Image 1 (spheres, one colour):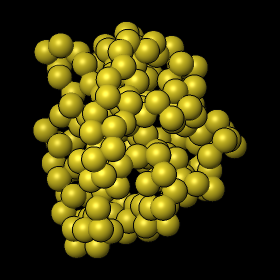
Image 2 (cartoon, helix red, strand yellow):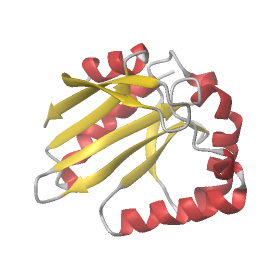
Image 3 (tube, one colour):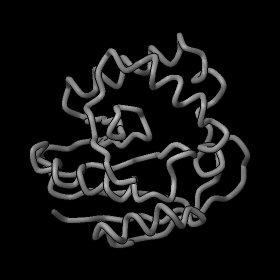
Amino acid sequence: MKDIYIDRLNEQDAQELFAFECNNRRFFEHTVQSRGDDYYSFGTFEIRHKELLKEQEDAISSCYLIKDGSGIIVGRINLVDIDPINGTAHVGYRIGEAFTQKGIANEALKLLVNLAPELNVTQIHAKTTSSNMASQKVLVKNGFERISINTENNADTGQKVTFYHFSKNL
């Protein structure tokens, strides 16, 4: 399934995006740090959603929903910490469990990389855990190079987590 597109996040997406996040919570928490129980209360989620929209308005983030040909949310992909002076940003993405291993992350990242110059971004950074092989493959396939490795303590569990940092010049 590569018949996807990325759609800029807007206010009307809150309900459908909340359902997507709730439906995929357990799956996401296997590869990324939990967002905490509060995130999965619609009131808290709606506040965070509005904060993301404000970040977009202020041009410090650009958030997108990854949708299939019928308009169903299959994932999300974001450019955050956009620095227009240095032309840098960080990318993050997540694909719903039912939609993994179909080339969606690869295609969505390709679409986002093509959009980045319109946002005055000329260099994109990414970070993934050492155990997230699927994400590493997507980054490398899209021309990202691993530039460093570091270990951090997980704030919730206290366990050490190794991160790989990637970068791509556009």
